[in-house]
Length: 235
Image: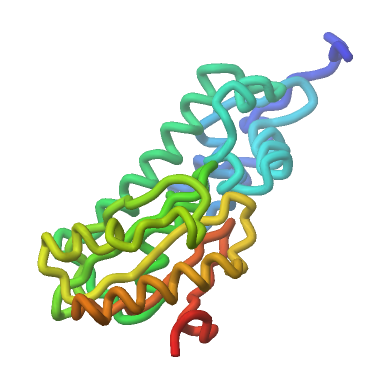
């Protein structure tokens, strides 16, 4: 349906000055802004009937939050009313910068003291993957991260995953322990029977190689599960 040309165009400047996202950022910093307000700063202007904040709220509702915007195909984002290629590129670029900042982390290699520490390093990126990816986080004797290696892409099940591949880099890098991590593109991180079977097989192989398997994390949309915490595959 074509929008009526008589409908007024709403801009951020139509808001009271204290309610404008950019002015609020100047005064109070970015942490006080909602996700919609931060996106509105990127968009700058809205469309007839919606200011930039309202357009941002619509996008977040349509794609179910920032994670959905991160996963959304570029073409689909361009098709949203009031977006187009330029604004879609700005949104994607901002999200990618956030992902790279999260990945870069501190100069010193992070130490893993809990399942949450490991999940925080990968969940931002892995929650947006459209296929299952199996990765291994290699740790030294002080539980500091040496490397995160991608081992497998596709369905993670006991008949396809070669346990030897899981330990290949760990043996080469002389890692003391490792954490298995894979994602569920469905968004539901509930471990499957195959996830548990893979975990058992990897743990047994680790005992033979004297490499501790500390955990197996399943990453979903905004959530993750530790198989060790749930007692699945670990005994």
